[in-house]
Image 1 (cartoon, one colour):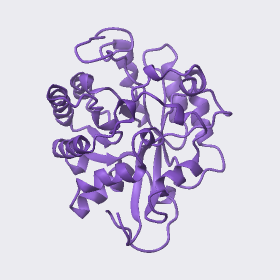
Image 2 (cartoon, rainbow, N blue to C red):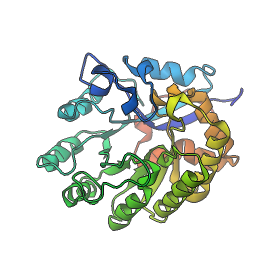
Image 3 (cartoon, helix red, strand yellow):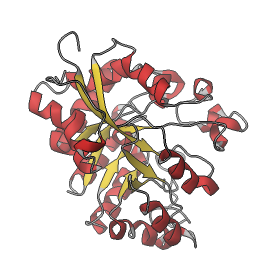
Image 4 (spheres, rainbow, N blue to C red):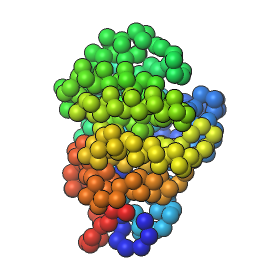
Length: 322
């Protein structure tokens, strides 16, 4: 990532928030690091807006990264403010390309979900929904059949509504639920699914990685699933460089570069690594220029239906891909 033309990116996963414009319980209420999967998140408890995003994506060398467009994923704003979050992202004044696609929230398995889905789908740049299923606290646990789980029929019925609105599902579960998620993906072949954060391989032991790998293979067997190469940090702000290289290479081997997309997960990923470190990790695993182009920009633009007219204007010239 040194010298030459700017590196073209469509960032498939990041968050924005303005704390005086909405209520974000996890950021504004009682600080509970034990409840957050990465631990200490005090550094996130401030506004994160396009200026901060631009700062972070340029921190490793101004002008070396050209962010053409981004995908904003719901930031766990107060669930009563789900539509308000989407409306905020559609307000005036946003730089072109920022939140060019929006993954909003809807509460699957609740009486008002169908109506709320219709409202979210009515916004011009909403392309998908993220509703996290109920998950066990760790490997070996089970929540099967409980309300909000991936076996809850009411929850699944609302999930199945997404294709009718032209919406995808951002799937976010830890590695011990990947095989269950694959069963859902196989049962809903018309639902386009983006697996968040490389399946969250939080346990880097041989046993943990074997369970992650089997789950990833089960999901990759479903042609309607793509993977986001994002969030490789570990609890306590740890950055396991050798392990992360292995994770990226194995994920690409399992899904192929045609079904993978880069996501920064800013600002959350900054708890363990800079944007440049995360991007460099993904680039290192993609020596083929055509594959890099797909993973860094093309796949996300296609999956989230981001038109050229919705991307940030860039100087005329050639972009490079690592």
